Length: 506
Ligand code: BES
Ligand code: ZN
Ligand code: ZN
Image (cartoon, rainbow, N blue to C red; front, side, top):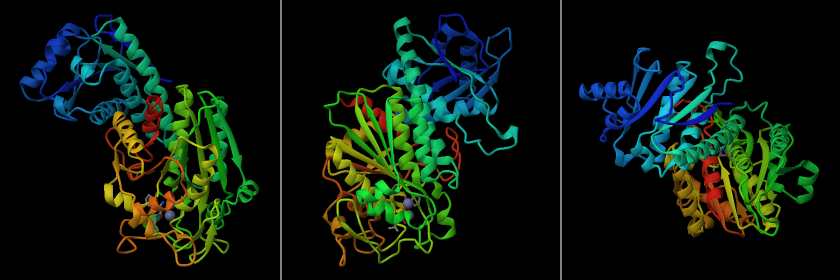
């Protein structure tokens, strides 16, 4: 566990392997730095004067220091860009990249100076402390489970010392922020870890087991795992239909957290838990099947959020529902032309077995009604169409409820995640009507391929009778490639948004 500490700039110095100094491009930092460390200030002055380093976004300069000059063996100046352009997202990227750089160099004790301008922009210590800690935990995570070469395994960062030029009261708020941020970061990494686990290991049964273990760590989480007989009894025809092609048993996972009084109606989170999506009989072509272990990232993010909610002891009632199955082709697989009956009795014509996410979500959305929820938010890697529309850094949000959508979008931007509102509407709903059943699982507006993200959302809407929002996770991975501030694989998108959402709403 990383040690997170706050020091006033006037306090005596602790040893660290590197001092990170974030610098705006257009706001001088030298004067305030002088009060903290004349050598660090002087060096920055020289660098900006010679224009070797000016603080442009993502610019980085590492300068070694002599032992008689500074307690820090080196200083890493990092560019924040222009002050008016700073955002939570930008900050996370710049600071995260600095942490990753330090970690790659095996500098395990990091000190970070917080310029006053940054402190003010980020509205004080609680939020900024939280962001700095989240960034550390999230950016230094690496999925190394299967690496046998010790050199290829990343080293942990042991300590982060945040240095502020404020007073003791401010120090307290940073300490609180850092502690919260660390818990949030760990919740994000829990989701990433589940997502990165290879699909032969990460089966619905394994996912269910991991939830049991999570609940052992957090006694405020109560889990119920429904197996086939219970799923059959409930009539979850969507989940059972999708699971038919696989040797792996389906599971329906329920996690309950009661942080408010029993009489308060809960919010329900639903996460798509397809542990591998081959497409089923409507088999995906080879290159499209790559990364389909990530088809349970909706479930992973919901579980990460539950961990965060429990560890922060939020005063909310939140329930997570995870339908989980593997989508495989076989002699017992469900087929195009089949008609499945969802838990609420609605019949669904199957036109493509690769549109399986909506089938298992339909049953979970029906099940959610039992709780008379104040709201239901589902997260799912539902369509390639949403990725085509938005790219891989933003996810789509669909909701008939403007307030719910806007609050979620605001919660996302507070954590540096990006959501973009996408449409629902009659034309999408009409496109899902079937000739032989109530609805079908494939439809487009003006052509089968058009409006695929919205028709998928409209399909889900048929199963909702409460305030509801759907997040199509087009940005939950960056296609196995590392970024400067976050390593390859699952990125835990949605976890922070959800935690922020529940921490804020009353
Ligand atoms: N899991 C996929 C969506 C997906 C594709 C997520 C690529 C991440 C990356 C989903 O089950 C799916 O296959 N959707 C189809 C729907 C189509 C058959 C209507 C798609 O998007 O192609
Ligand atoms: Zn699919
Ligand atoms: Zn899928």
